[in-house]
Amino acid sequence: MAAERVEDEDEDDREVGHVIVEDDTAGISAEEAQLTAVGSAHSFLSAADIELIQTVAEELKSKLGHEARGFDGSWDTWFLHTAGVFGERLSGLRDRLVGLAQKLDKDGGWGMLKSGDIEEGRVQLRCVEFHEMREGGGLYDPTHKDDGSLITLDCMLAEPGEDFGGGTFQTLEADGTMKEHQFEQGDVVGFVSHKYHCVQPVDWGERSVMILELWRGELRTCPHRCEQPTGRCVHAGQLVELKGLEDSLPQLKQAMLDASRAFKAQELKMQIIKGEVEAEGSSAGAQKRQHTK
Ligand SMILES: [Zn+2]
Image (cartoon, rainbow, N blue to C red; front, side, top):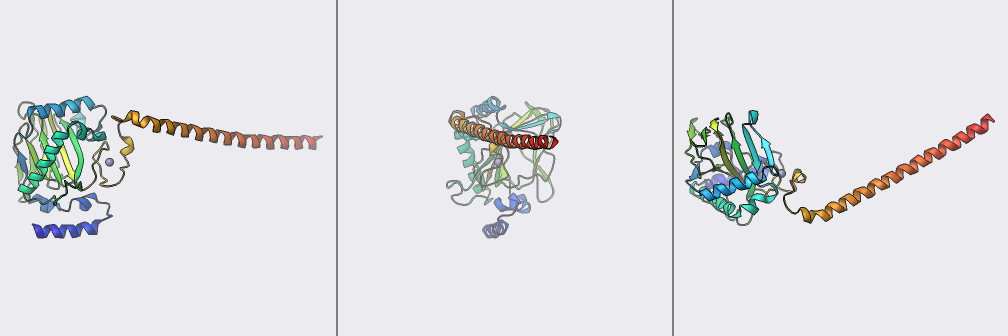
């Protein structure tokens, strides 16, 4: 495994500047990822943890980045990391989950995290998603993978068999079989992001999960699953203003003043041009009148 990692790093270097994010940041192919085992932590989340996640999500749904993914409204996703909400409201849980990702990586021998990656901030949370999947909703593609991320954590918030039916989490293994994974309420399933995974259609009820993806990139607070590991995201401007509105008011006021000044300057310029045209027009008229005399 160690020798393979070195090769991956070389591959990374060649891919620097390439548009395909997955090769820049993950350093593992789907074939390699397929050989890794899914890890899990049974009852990792307490009832209080789950309630807190659901309360925060419900409270902020209208303000968080949102994506409708299923047909006929069967699958909704809200981005809990929008404007840093997840880190602010659920910091304790975040720390425990990042710690779990480190443990699963170590225990599973995945080698996705290098020494100091988390501590020194080279690996960060790319996104934290709150999913609600209803009848017919599912992640059907058997070769779906989370491109560009290192480790994905899937937290089961609902009670299978009580809150919903179907919706089984599966992975496509190297031998071509689909492996079903036991996934009870409060369990967290973790895997190498490039490992093929899917979710069978939900038959009834509502399947709610929280998904976290770690990547070799900056901590993201833009209201979507970001594709840009470093630098200012082009979607950062779409941020829903949840906090710091008061702090941003002076800037907003200044921006409006600037815009108003620019508008007035433009208006003045237009008046001058108009005045010149009119002056020209009247002098031409005067000349015309002189000719007709
Ligand atoms: Zn972004």
